[in-house]
Length: 226
Image (cartoon, rainbow, N blue to C red; front, top):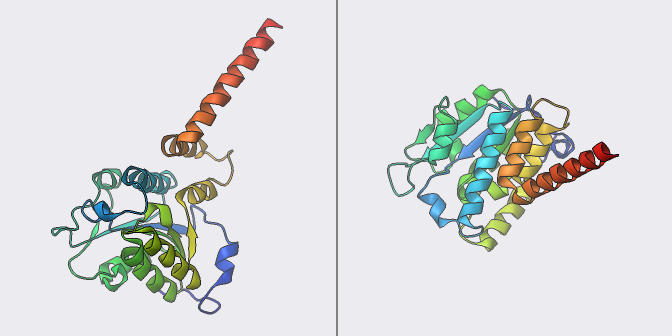
């Protein structure tokens, strides 16, 4: 499946919002061996970001494609939390291809989602994310690259890869933007789930929520006295 675009860089993609009905989630090579090499972000923060993005996909019932590369080798198995979160997803195991887009089973799984906008994260950013992101862009998809749920060996590699992704027309974002965009309106039914994700993975947000609850309780108490 190839989607038509207006030239190599589809600028219209920057003007369109992600929705639960037009997007798919692609989680690439979040493996417990490769993740140990991530140095541009603290490992605990990186893990939290990946889980926040995955929970967002689960909350909005996004078609989700998960793949691992050479899992029986040093790259290691898929993150346990992802395997437990998506028991219904058949993980695409790539015995050889470094670029996930070179694996026919992966491409078929992406095509089966029927979605034009692909939300992608991978380890490492400069290889496991960059290679399939560029390939998907070439195939005509709108590609959203989530940098903080991806990771690299050092900050310079991360930043230079982000530049190349943007030059190719990919949209680079963090997980919180994706979560907020898919929520769109606090009156939507997914609001409580979105608040849970923000509270669990953005520490300051849970503090803000606590402040709001305490302030609300104090106001109600004062009104009751009056």
